[in-house]
Length: 185
Image 1: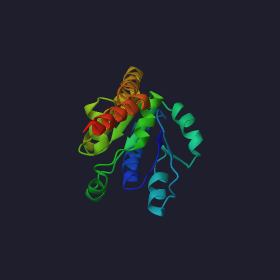
Image 2: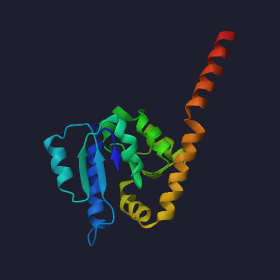
Image 3: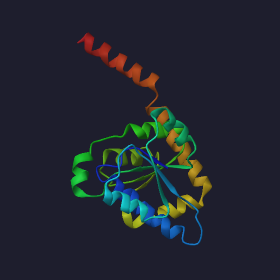
Image 4: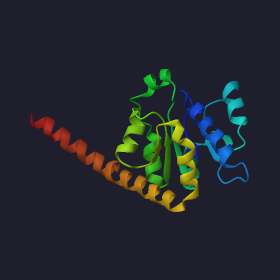
C-alpha cells in the first residue's frame, strides 16, 4: 500500500512497481499495490496506472482514515523519483509519511535513488527493504512477497527505528535540552 503524494515523478516509480507486479502475478494475483493519494491523476498518470492490473488507484481518503488504511497493509511502499530533474528537486526532502509508517510497525518497501534523503535514511537505519537500483526491483519484490518472515523482520525494524528516533517525548526532551544550552550561552 502506498499513501501520499504521487507528484515529483513518484507516480513513475509506482508504475514501474506495477509493471513488475504484473510479471509476478502472471499466473495468479499474489500481490497488489493499492495507491491512496489526494492528487488528481493527469491523463498520462491515469493511463500508466490503468495499464497495470496490479495497481489499484483508490483516490484520496480523509486524514483521519489514513492510519486505519495503513494498519491494514502487509507492506507499506515509499517511493522517490528516479529521474534527474525530480531527484534534484527532492533530494533533501524527508516525507512525514515515513514516520507514520514507522508508527504502524509494518514492513516498508522503499524504491528510489540512494542519495535521496529518505532512501539514505531508511538504508542507514536498516528500517526498510530498499531498492536503489531498478535492476534489483523484481528480485527484491519477489523475495519480500514470498517470505512472510522477511515482511515481519522489516516491520519490526521500522517500529524499532520509529521508537528510537521519532518518539515525540524524545524529540521534545532534545529540544528542551538544546534550548537550555542556548540560553546558557
